[in-house]
Length: 354
Image (cartoon, rainbow, N blue to C red; front, side, top):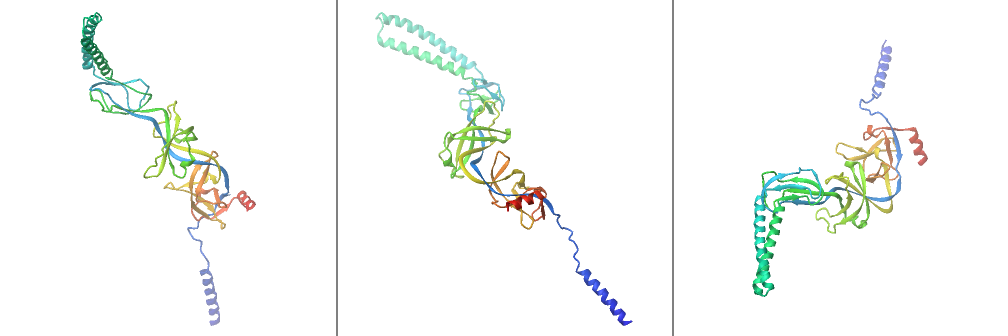
């Protein structure tokens, strides 16, 4: 009886030990995700310099009356397109009309006196000194008429060129004074794309060099030529301001729009170019990709880009090197360290390359 109990005890103990060695599956095990992979290789491409910038007006002018008076009408609104010579505002004219009438009356009297004295001078009956005084008085009277006439015309304010009213600083009933701004007008029939250029790249640009300007807000691009290169670097950023003049006859380009300037240098260089769809952005707008390791796991890698090609590919400035295995399909479902399974087509492609 004792022997049977010992045998049962040994059997139960062995069963308990074997159960203790069994590993239970972890609850947080991550599933294997199927992905597509592309081996990275450098490509020969024409060197393209990319610079972020913005659109600015060809000219910005602050307008105001050169005579004083009460504003009687304001005929334009802020943001309105105006044509060269268009009337913008007026001030009261009564004082200037009266001044002009007085000046004209004095001119008529002086002209009549000059006419009579000239007849005497021509007959030799008037001293030369008196004739010169009469002639001078007529000239002064005529100048006074011209000056008062200009003051009357200055009660009407006109647009000096075609553009946009960016600021309206007066209203009807307000008092205008010489030098006090009434409007700010932007000249926009032609505009500039302006960008800061680094010291290392400024030597690659010359006046007249063709530039492609991309305007994301319009989903359009325009070609222009470098018009202005500021020879003085900014003291804080140590960059040089470069401007490209653009035709804006369609009035679509507005000052302040973001722009991207692309300069084709004509030189060949090797770039790492990847599909734009392979790039992922996080909540902080940081750019990264996923790479496949030899152990079939996904690792996250930060990348810095420097431009976009016409084939919707992204030029990578840093973060990747030739031979890296880039995940191009399924990357949006990945987390750092996920197990991955390569799609059959990608396996064959990689084995052929390797």
